[in-house]
Image 1 (cartoon, rainbow, N blue to C red):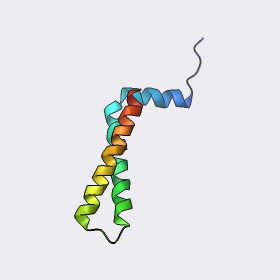
Image 2: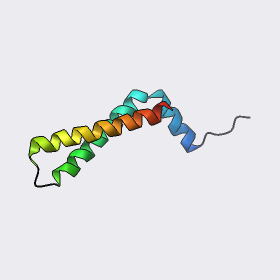
Image 3: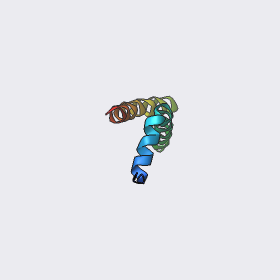
Image 4: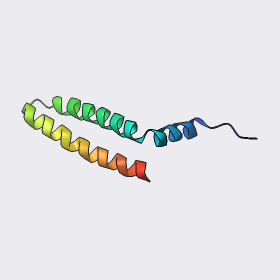
Length: 70
């Protein structure tokens, strides 16, 4: 008999089937968090805040891509 799938196995299967959507969601949530974090620093200009948020997000995205590819 087939054993019922655990919740972790179901989530892993969904991530494998929807890799592009998963990376897109991770990127969107990460860039939103980075912008929110940088907006809390009042001494920075808006352009610098956006540049820093994008730089931090690309590093997070690369880390997540490496983790997903394993």
